[in-house]
Length: 325
Image 1: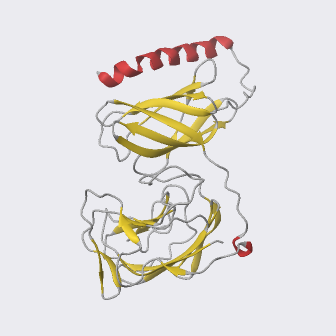
Image 2: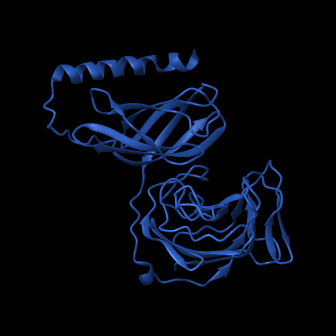
Image 3: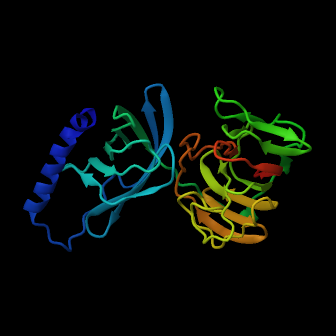
């Protein structure tokens, strides 16, 4: 088995770690110092010719237990119940059950702290080894939104054509069309990406969707504000208005399917505020990291607005943005 043989050295070192901890007979109330690898990390995974972003958070829980959260190529942040360290405190490993991956085996993940960053390896859905590197996620300072000097408001959707936009995947059909002043995802299958990139901004969108549909707004191409037919359901980070897998809105202010809806989104640094159909549902909440399906993991840089189009149909009649000066 390719996957098992790849991780046999890790399994051996893990046994050594556990044995050494038991032999040390540590005082159960002695707290260890957090190792250098704790914190939030923006990862880049290289799988042959495919390169995609990922995200990892490692933190100390209690006296000596390392836990964390992980975001893969798709899906949301998932909890890591235990992260195992080697004796030097620089190497680590953990495993996770699959989420949206098309695999039946657990994800085995290992890495080490090196030159201020992280390097490591894991396996893809075919059980083949892939490598990854990580840089520490930036601390994005933010002024209160009312102190920001805002620039000129502009229409990202001009009501006429797709001149401000491109598609994410050049090898897939573009199902987005403009008809009677509306931007319509007529044949879902490709994401729409703005040509212009933004740092801090205010965004206002008006949209509607049919029953059961699913879309999303990727702020700077990295952080998804979920759009889905969830009218009447309990608020959840995976449902409409939430930052997928990270931030749960205070209320579900969505209207029924086929009704026009409006979101006003303000992103300054990592702080997010969302007003949905006139109800403030998120107020100055920090976004911890990228969400699955992001364009890249370069959190400290400006990025485009990406509209998810590979899940379900959606129609926009307004997409306007006000960037900070």
